[in-house]
Image (cartoon, rainbow, N blue to C red; front, side):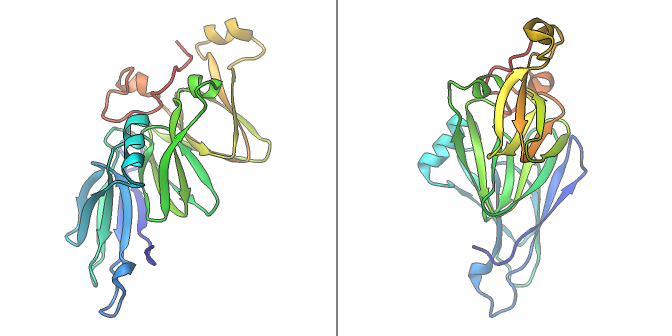
Length: 256
């Protein structure tokens, strides 16, 4: 693993945000070549790089993991590896999601796991691992939260770049704190959180919830963090997401 870490910075925060990553040089002539600075990102996320940057494709986790990522979560089969192998020159890269929307940076710590919806993964440090994950196909949350049954799980240590439709909003829940999120707006959440589906208005009942236009909501119980997007993909890009990647498009939204 690299001893030097890239520096991440969100540029033009909003619906057309990008991320600038600065990669330090290896060092002096006696430095170890294994200390190269590197990060991984979604295929076709690179906009521009400096002359010191090397880019290569990789099947993260092997062929089976690549197939699972491509066919179950609709992410790319290959992951792009970006490296700066220069002994003396600092390198840089500018990346963005292939679809319009906001981006945010989440710092993963040891022992933490973050669940990502399809299309939310953008990039990560070398120490961050992203793999496919499956919810129960019989669960209410998997079928009616708008996330779909097949998701991504991020773990490890380092910076994780997440993308969304519209603007991104972060909520940190304390122990036992509850928050409801309209289905289709979920981007990522802590894997340790309790999740369930509930009527938007328990007092109004099924008819009242449906006629309000809200229908079902996803309930989260802290502690943990939730990332949500301001717009649903179906409302922006068409019912299938309209782009090359899918976000929250794997399941029934539960709403009209």
